[in-house]
Image (cartoon, rainbow, N blue to C red; front, side, top):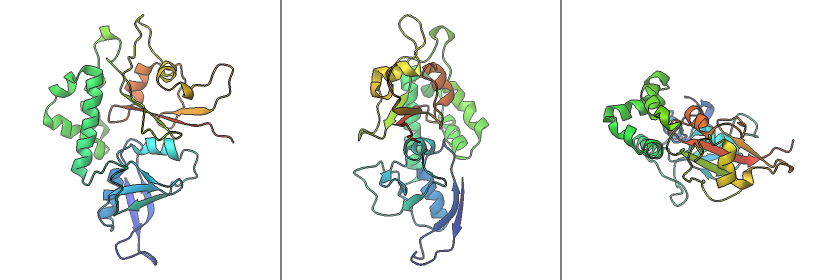
Length: 255
């Protein structure tokens, strides 16, 4: 992630920073952006606000998820306003330090492994393994990250998949933060469940009827997977570093 500050100009104060360029990877979380800005000349970072849509956005969500959900049809670059005071405690999770961000990340990984392996894999790891997982993500060292994370993506061959799929479904048309339920990747008859099967059960409004007009896009990592894609494959290959499959349901573009 690169942050390039410009010299403050009126009406900016001596502690404000104008950003000429900031790059963040999809897999990373947006809270660390505020801390990078802090080190570029700002004050302590508490929250992010997306300038083109308005309102505070959860900094503990991955950057790619926020972009898919809120700005995928916006013109680039994505305009972000970073606030350094008056954090909306009642509306958003507050992570006041990088240690708090790390703790939240590891909490999500542990929750995902509880769903996939009854926490057996994560409990067998040592504290240094947890730290390597986090540092590999923070420093963009995929080999360091994957050496640990690959263990969380394995399962016995005879089981054909995870116990449950860690997923969260986000929509722009509801105030509910996300949908999360227990869902197995393999049906009782041994058939692999697909993305379409998941949506039909937990979010049927996202799927257009066979003879109806398509009203929504289903986005994961900036792409629209086919609804016939096996959910187990998606979980293994398109999960974010927290091991969750973050799925955005957004209105179908009209142009």
